[in-house]
Image (cartoon, rainbow, N blue to C red; front, side, top):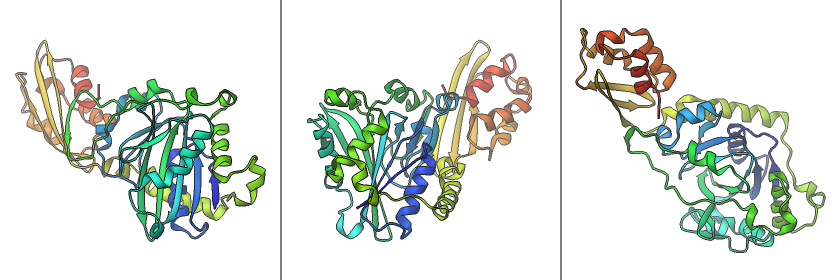
Length: 339
């Protein structure tokens, strides 16, 4: 079995690499990939991206957001997390049987001291009832990949902030993540492994799966990307994982309510969002204005549902005409941003 150690820390490039190698004949399955990411959130194929992330926090803290091909829930990753992927022939792997596929990883964790690690439920690996790994699966053209996370030493405070659902009322048909108690693996590992960084942890996992004492023993099984590979990977990355339409526009239709009481009156905005754009918006409240607020509603139709795009329209409008006595900045903050 061959393996690939990804040098990139960009989740979008790594997901594109996984997809490229699965769909090409460069490596025959079964093979594995290992990668470590900068701060990012990966939402499942059938999720509403905005429903899963704290968009303001992600933008302020440079958390990359993308969507994967496989289903399941949203996952946060940073440099304290190790990702692994198995690519296998679909004929030999029952779809949804995560337990069998990830067993070599669980066995490796047992050797490192995490003796209580076990597959629990549909696609999680846990220890002491706390989740440290989520897994998802995807099948196409006779091949199946299953990718998972291993929380080695993740910043758990950031997990809570980045994945926190905004306070605004969102209703959609997207598949919602189930939040679980989470833990890092490092405290459970044997004393001799406590000084490992994430890359060192990765290497120990690889050595255990291949049953060797040194990576030098299996150098012949490591696949190195070619220039041709990188060109194909970039094309997929641009088409999907860096594409706004894929990440946000593929979200299921949803409605969102933004309501606040100001001294000068209450503003209650109801947005219907389709394919990541404002399909319609309706304003309710006891505010006063000389203009017909339906004019503002019309200006917002078709606009990308992002803070920047909504704010741009509102900043150009004469908001005092529609919301007399209200500070325009407060109105923009309510309608454009997430809290």
